[in-house]
Image (tube, rainbow, N blue to C red; front, side, top):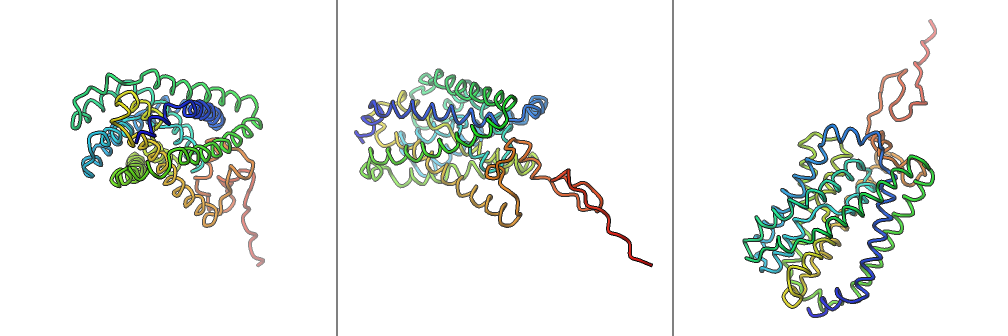
Length: 349
């Protein structure tokens, strides 16, 4: 357990954090290139994204974390690590996964920004409500509001630049998007390999099986609850996928920062690893869902992949793919407005 504080406080760890932060900013720049500005006005007039962010991140996920910690009878420190993760706002990973799942990017980004803004008030409230079941220390007083504001800025500024890039230079925006996604994938693989090599199996074996079980079940519960909530609001399939991913994905970097501030290293021990475990399982589980969806889309529905065919990758492209084709003769199809199916010739008398 003593290896954990030493690792997280080492210059290598700080260097990794800075590098990953820069890669995430570049990734958010790429995701900003997928935003359709004409659709953002609809989210302002009908703030369904803000409402869903409020319910998903600060009602569903804290309650799921609280119930799982009670169900598995976690000790005080482990329960607080789980609760902190459940009370965090949505992470940037949800935006990336939403793009890969052909979700509604505008809704995904609006939900991420809204949940981060709301976290300034609602995250302390959730911790105050639920943390009293395990500790008497006011964790609310240790909230890193500076880290929350930094997270908000690192999301808003790159996305804004990406929107401008899409507006002025469409082809460049497509290239930036694809390069940013590949750079993030390589960075995540390097991060997991390096972290595993530094910590080793000794620390991983010291984490109780119940904590692993919570790390597996918690993202699944979030994904299922988010999809169910979106279905309750009768949102289209692309929006349901985005809400589902936004609910299950948490800002694990913020959770780690609070753990460092709230508890001494000797007390936390292996629980410093819970945010990393959660990040691993939330990505792996979402990856399985996305793989199944994309396979079904390409092999069964025979729909092209916008990210692979070099075409338009904006939100509107994904929405058009969800539309049904008008089956009547002589109509212009929804999927391809340049194709006209003519009426068949009448038979000769």
